[in-house]
Length: 311
Length: 186
Image 1: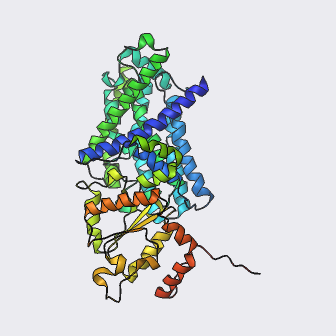
Image 2: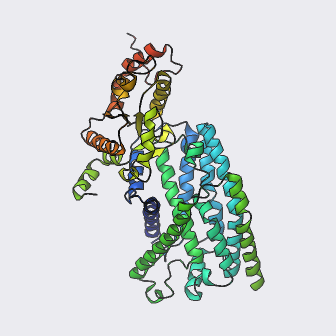
Image 3: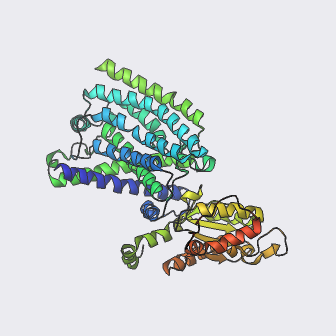
C-alpha cells in the first residue's frame, strides 16, 4: 500500500508539474495574442536535454544538481492528495525544513561552475528565500495554532468537516498573505529575479547543459506543483468538494475524483498566478525584498495575532 | 500532433525531441539580427515551433549566424560554437555567409563561413523575412529526419581541417584544440 501511494504520488507530481509548466507557457502566449507551444513542450524539452552530451565541471557540479532535484522530489511526499500520503510524521515542520534543500544544491552547483553570473544569481536566490521564508513561517504557524496539529493529513481532514480555511474568518488573513508571496516562491514575475535571462544570463543555470538542465527543469516543475499543492491543502480544503465526497471517500472512485478535484484547484491557482505574471515587469532584488517585508509580513503577523487571540 | 508521428516518437525519441525543441543562442552577429526579434515575438511566433532564445551557449541547440561575419566576430563565434553541447545545428541567414553578400570585396569579412565552422543550411535573402525563417526551420526538421544535419559530426571528424583554417586566419589561437589529436607514436 505504501509503495502504491509512493508510486502514484510521484507520477502525479511529475505529470502535473510538466502539464502546469506547459499550461503556463500556453496561457502566457494566448495573453500575448499568439499561439504558443504545444502543451507537452516541457516534456519534449526534457527529452531533448537528456539526449545531449553535457559538459561537467567536476563532482560537486553533478552532486549539487542531484541534491536540488532530491530536495524538491522528497517534498511532494509530505503533501497529501485526497487520501494518498507517504509521510505523516513531521508534517509542516518537515516541509519548512526540506523546502530549503533545493537552493543549497543549486548553490553548490553554481559554485562548482565558477561563473560570475551564477554567483550573482545565487546571491539573489538566497536573498529572495530569506525574504519570503519569514512570512511563510508566520503563515504556517497560524495554521498550526488554529488546528492544533502539525500533521497535514489532519488539517485536510478537519477542513472536510468545518469548511475551507480560506473561508473561515480566522485564517483569511494568512491565506491572503500566502497569495501575496506566492509569485515570489514560484519565481514568476514580478519576482523573476533569480533566473533573469536578459540580465545575468539565466543566473544559477548558466553553466547547465544537457542532463544538468534537464534535472533543473524537472526540479522547477516539481517545485511549482509542490508549492501550489501546499496552498490547496492548507487553505482550499485539499481534495474536498464541500463535503459532497464524504460518503464515497474510502473507495477507489472517491480517491480518483478527489485527485481530479485537487488538480482542478491547483490549475485554477496557477492560472491566477499567470495573470499576474503576464502584466508585471521584473522587480529588482532590493525592491522585491522591500515589498515582501512590508505588506505580506504585516498581514501574516496580524493573522497570527488573530489566531492566537481567538484560540 | 499527427497520429502517424506517434510511432516515430517511440522509435527514436531523441531525434524527434531534437527537432521540436530547438533552443537558439541569442547571438547577434551582424545587421541581420534585426529580423530575429520579430520572429520570436508575438506577430510571427517562433515559440509554436519549439524555438526559444536562451542566454548561454551551454543551454543551446541551434546557432543562428545572421548576417555578415567580420573577422573579430568569427573568434567569438568559434568560441561560442565550441561551448555548445552536441548535437548542435547551425543555420546561416542571409547572403553574406554564403559568398560574402553585400560585403564581397571587403578586407574584413569572411567570404565562405563553411571553412571555419560547419553550417547545416542557408536561408537566402537580405535579410530573410520571418516567413522565410520558418520555412527554413521546417527544412531543418526534414534534414534532421534524414540524418543529414550532421555538421557537428563533420566538425568532430575533420577538426584538423577547421583548426588549420582558423589558425591560418588568426595566427595563434589562444585556446587549445577542442579535440586534441591523439599522437600515434610507433
